[in-house]
Structures are given as structure tokens and as C-alpha cells.
Image (cartoon, rainbow, N blue to C red; front, top):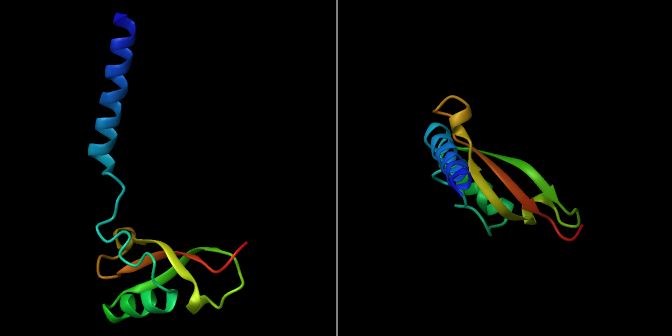
Length: 95
């Protein structure tokens, strides 16, 4: 029984350490554009000085502007802080 407690404590400690060092992985603006069409999300991002980039696309029946954003993440932390880059995942109809 002591072996399981030590093993469980080590796992929890490792998870806490990785969260402290790497963060939770959730961007502050994640999900701001979810549910919008790509055209609306891209316009809002560009209006605020950002750059929209399609990270993933599922389906192909719709033009890109009509696709629905299913996930959005601010990835400006990977580049110059003045670059506000948003990675968008879109669904464009059935597969």
C-alpha cells in the first residue's frame, strides 16, 4: 500500500511541476471566435490588428468564408509580441 501512495504522490508532483513550468496551455483569447463564420472571425481579428491563419480545415463543400470556426487560439507568444496571430480550425461541411 505504501508503494501505491508514493507512486501516486510522485505523479501528482510531476503534473504540478509541468503545469508550473509550462503553464496550463490555454491561451487568454482561446475560443473568442468559436462558432463564427471564418469571414466574421477573420474580419474581427484583422480589425484588431491581428492575422488569422487557418490551422485545420475539415470538409470541403463550402467556400472558406462560409466555414464555421470550431477552435481559435492566440499564438502570438510564439512570435514577436506585436504580432497578434490567431490559429483557426474551421469546418466547411461534411467530410
